[in-house]
Image (cartoon, rainbow, N blue to C red; front, top):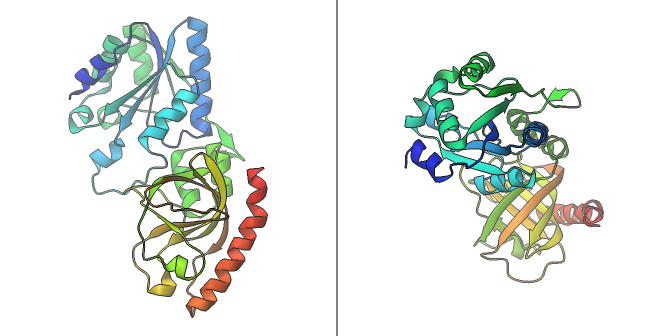
Length: 309
């Protein structure tokens, strides 16, 4: 399906005030921009709308690049709608779309979404070669009769919040800072798959998560987490790493739920990362590892249980 067919499928019957972007993470900076968008739309009696893309344009323009995503498309749409957006439009980013210049793209937004206003971030650009910067969009707005506004950057502790900053912070394992930047816990959502049950032999059964390709992960180590299953929350200890004590291998994410009884195989879990407990470590023996896991679980019971209250 081409871009015009996709837009025709979601065509708006009323004029809109729009913003355009990836919105990976739907972090506090995005929330700041969307809040302004909703205000302006209400003032003018327009629908508020977000136009986003899937997959990330960089993965199409630079197919060999690595750009881990913070949240999946389903959650991105959910969080945007929770912010009160009237219209969330997801367009497939394809080589065809990449060839559109800013004028051509704006013409389509006017035609199908009845764009009357556009609000963008300070470094935003769209269209072929990112030619549609704020100056060009303002000029196009005067020509095509839509307003253009630039939202101010949003800072947390002096830093401008961005998806790139969150990825960098996550890669450092600082999930406490990530929570401040995202406005909520960094969360993995995945189904439980079968394992070698090594955790069970150690006395601490774990759920091995089927992490989708491209998902951003905290750096290797053990984390105090909150795991949600069947609408219930449990304190949990989650390991991100390659299990070096048993010879290593591909990176896995395994979580041990405190006080959970039952089979988790095939269930979907949401694992919220609260704080890092320690780095990944090679232990001399399974017995030494078991002793450390016991300490990790004790810390989780103290530190994470109070987060559940």
